[in-house]
Length: 291
Image (tube, rainbow, N blue to C red; front, side):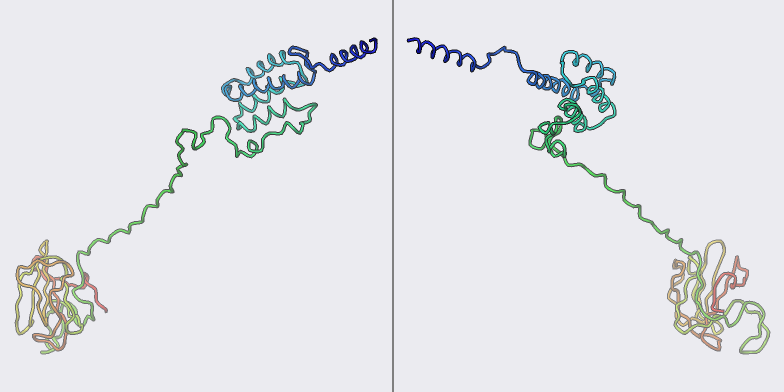
């Protein structure tokens, strides 16, 4: 009977030693440190997410208050000071979060292996709080790049239409003024200039105007005269053909006839005269020739 009683006492004592701690039993120092660290992280996360506008001095003061409540090896004053510095300098969330994690979960300046940040947060592939993720109920829009400014096309200025042109471009064979007539050999006044070109060469209107008259004579052959503005007239003779009629309006450079050898001539050429208010004038200062 005594043996049974002894065995019962020994069994009861073993059960009492193996009894697990009840709720409310005092935690070990290591457990308390981990709980305090968790509480500190909660407070710090609230500061990071909600306290972007808190001044640096206010963050340091808050760290002092939390440090007084949480007794452990972590220097929370230094942690809050660094967090406040990061927030005031506008550092990104990932960098500020790394500061909190490193300071709270380090022991004597060494970071334990199980305290490493998740890789997706470190690399930026995760989605920190406040980031809009497609599919979470918020419409996402692609970033619109500003298109490059279009170059203004260079517009070449349109040259102004000439007011006058040379009626033909050829060789000057006889100028304006006194000369020995090529047929009768007498000294006579030459009322215009003679320009030698190929037969059929187009004759162009010296300036815009109106056909004053068209005619034919033994001396000049087929001829016409144009009347321009400001009392100017031009006369064209020895034509092979006339392409306009009396009273017709012509533009500068418009074809009015063809060069020929009609009338009293020794060869194909254009006889060209100019008058200002009825007075003869030398055409050479106003036209161009090959010589």
